[in-house]
Image (cartoon, rainbow, N blue to C red):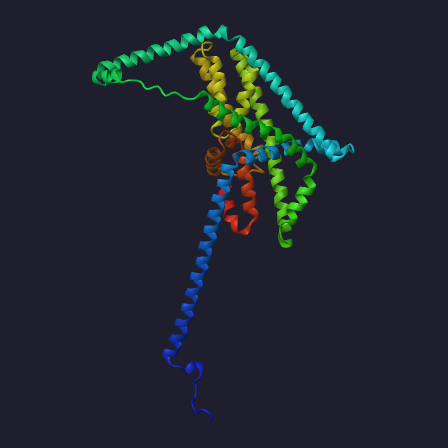
Length: 382
């Protein structure tokens, strides 16, 4: 039996039916927004957990990670040598062997040179020891005078300190030696692996790049290939630029230190020039060797000249030369560089300060080519 109920047209429906449909639509939109917010929160939580897991792995596997990263930097530095030898129709494997042997020869020659300079400096220490003792004795006298003044002002506190019984904590020399031996063993093992890793990275470079690209889905392989290419250009520019800037600062430092009459000025200038390459903290490390060598030899003016030379070279290189030579490939803002130095220095120590900038540069390039991380890459950029 057909129903005699007549449904009014949409324009003639009552206000209650219209309100019900709008409420259902609004409720559905709210549920969709909650679902999207939960997905975004879950994705953010996964990213945070992944970052923490990577940092934990880098911390506990610091020897392995540092060895791999140092090997990668050395492989990129030796790539032009292998390419040059390949133009003479030399197989890539043979060119890689020659490049690694050249590297070992340069490292051995440099170690031999610096070792002989260090031994000669030790032999000549008696010439400067009298002046150094005079400076140290002057500082010691001032310290004693401050202590006597403090005892006159606070006699009760001084008496309490004099009555204190010193407690000598005996440490086991064998335990200390064992711990040190373990650390030295790890370092030596890592150093022994570096030539082999560099050789295989050089000889299997094309294979490694091709297979790495093939790990991604077909739709993302072009992006992965472009990303790897930009990372390669950035690392090569970083190594070449730092080497050129380091040579410039070393040459100027040698000239100034030689003019001031510092002993082994060429040795001190080379060390100071390349230590100054480290962002922010480099200027402090670079000024220590020449100041230590100038104690007892230079007056206040000479010490000021050393500090101003190191500081001026560092500021000129970091603000003028660095942006021109490396800035096109490594576009990081000072805040990102400072955070990277803090994080990687805490995780890897002194070597972390050296590797922090290229690691952060690689992270930025990856973020620039991943859609979901592009805003993070823009935050790290200039």
